[in-house]
Length: 97
Image (cartoon, rainbow, N blue to C red; front, side, top):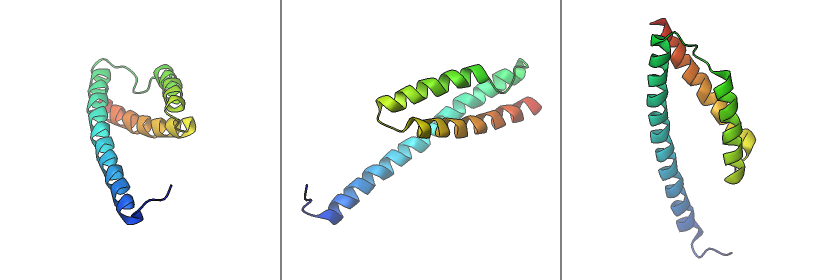
């Protein structure tokens, strides 16, 4: 497919990418607001910061979603592990307060 104005198409695609990136940042912020509440709840009730069984279930669920979305499941799992490491850090901090 030949694009009549490649520069205009590039700008259009980049604008879409920028919008998606902004949405992802706001979604991550909302996710962390929820997980911080989980951390407070766990700390108040002396529950462990990490829940390996839940994490395992989430990895399986996200890998399946990634496959369905034609996204590399390995990437989805790496992303999840990165986010969970930060969540556990927050939970550990909440427990030490």
